[in-house]
Length: 450
Image (tube, rainbow, N blue to C red; front, side, top):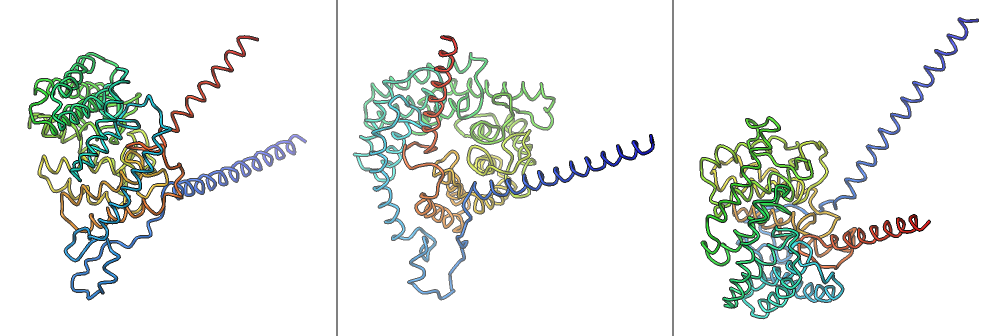
């Protein structure tokens, strides 16, 4: 009897194990299918044929007219007209959309300063005075609503003040330009003294450094004193050395940074965005510091590359998912190109070129057309590679990305406006977060009343 019970228990255990294994296999297959579906939903399949040099191929002029490049490898006149026409249409749509935009969002990232910067760039290309005047209109609006909470170019007061200084400078409003500049430099004290401030580009010290270097590039090399820039650079370097020592990584990665207790690699919150700023000539980082600290830290990031050519979002993440400026290869490539310029080592240019292939394959994102986590930010990589290499392939690819932006917008996850510089959906997210907070507050108040 006892033997029979033992056999029965063993049989039941075996059945349970088989059942658990089958369930585990089903869950694993389901995860794989979901992962595959997610990847397909993350980006559009690139249906474009890649660039082929048509010199001597005897292809007809009618066929060539449909390509973005002419016989000399430059953007064709017909394609330029198409771009200019589209810019006019989009400006009209944007101005209409801005009528319902958040009146309090002064940021460069999602607000009015980003629009001012757009018109400033249009003025640079067209030299039309009306564009500069529109930039001034939006700058005036932003300078009235600064709140002093953040200090970076993209998300804080530094962006509106830097852009304001430049716009007034171009209009020869000397007094107004100097006032913006003085207020910008005053932010330095909080940048240096706030121990809780991060070092990354979107919200931190590197973002403030960007604002200082932007002013010097647009208004003259010594507009912001070198000592001001040096102090900010020193604070960034000291912070990176300190964390590297704490994490016992001084030999592998002499400069290490984290944001919200996570060591990101990408351009927005991570190592490569900070390294990109330290490599800028205007940052005036000494050559020995670049060689001893910055270069080996960049090489440490290089060795984290996936076989696909993409990079993880953080050191603790092994998922090859995100291909966008803020997380993934697009942001890293900008730093690799700067490393090639500074150190004159071909390995950096080769790696930037190799990594761009994953953008050509997986860079037409369904998230939208933004610079931060959208298709435009990915397409910008090809323009950067073209400037460095003069290879027609990259100019061709940039043009094809632009065409993709114009033809696939109806299939994006996010709606058209609100308009913003890096993302067309960030403002919607802010509004949703506010609604959720209000709901939670109402629930809490009701529970207190009970």
